[in-house]
Image 1 (cartoon, one colour):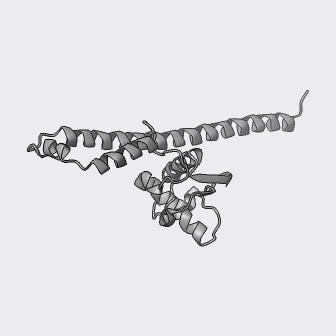
Image 2: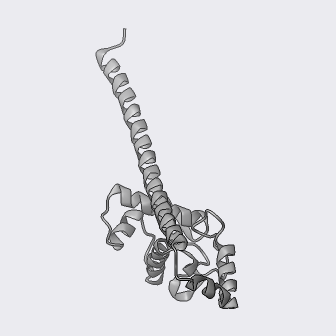
Image 3: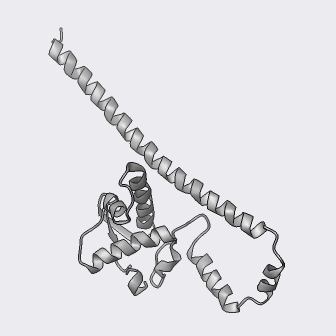
Length: 178
């Protein structure tokens, strides 16, 4: 017959495992919520852009299309090639300027470039939130983590230690182009 202490230890261990599992699930859901919120905002921006494009105008749009500068078409084509459909962050390659990134991603790259220039170490997402003047709350930190992970996956950033981000080798900051 097992001792009372042994039974309590078994129940405590089972409860600890359940708490750990629920915490992991809560973290996953919180990260998923942050990503969904970003996606929702992007769709809202897209809808506003479409509303603007479809809004009746005084005919200036048709004239602007005819007189468009052919160099602009080359720039637009290069940007379209740099960012694949459904991808906010193009895969980094030599010569790709940081300016192809959206403002939020540029801000992350700029902060890390400044740290590299000052020979400071990697930056965590909590530190990024503080640097950007955001509230250091889980939702903001997870949103930054999602963006930083996307930049890592596309070759712009490196994550040698979990949760600590630096510029990837070969990527220079906004001051030096790419």
